[in-house]
Length: 221
Ligand SMILES: [Zn+2]
Image (cartoon, rainbow, N blue to C red; front, side, top):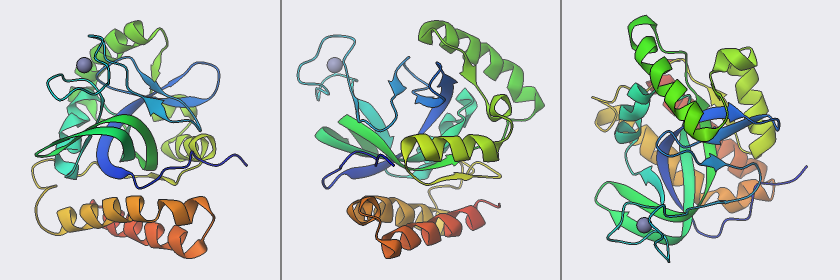
């Protein structure tokens, strides 16, 4: 099995993705710009305005991730399909609540449930617009059968742990209390244990799995 790329001392942050399939199986895409995160190789930021190096402090370019899960959870209104921790490395611009990085790769992912009725129409419109920009259809868990099937496929293709989640962390509460503590612990372990997991250390794999379970319990699996 090909391993996920080697990541030296990355920063880990929360972010969301959508999913497409351009013939190579499910692929993560940014909900903001039509950028796909490829399987097994780092994603490298490219500035639409031509910044070099990218990200530039005065620009808005780069791959985004946030320190608290709450900010990422807010993105649920864009119809995100996947929430997770991503490693950012290379050139990284720090902000008060997160980072913009040069290179990125997912560390651990959660496939989110299908959003209910009222919100869905608006999200469908957003998806159509993003699909046009991406040149490929944006897909939801149902297109792959179920959240479980999509989770398994993403895990296989990205070689990182992927879990179905029954709910999105509530953005209003996600950065306070019990949930915030568990999200922070997961984010810290996702970064600290990356070398161990990559070399197949079962203790490192287990440590992250326990953090994942703690978070899933807190968001009401
Ligand atoms: Zn730029």
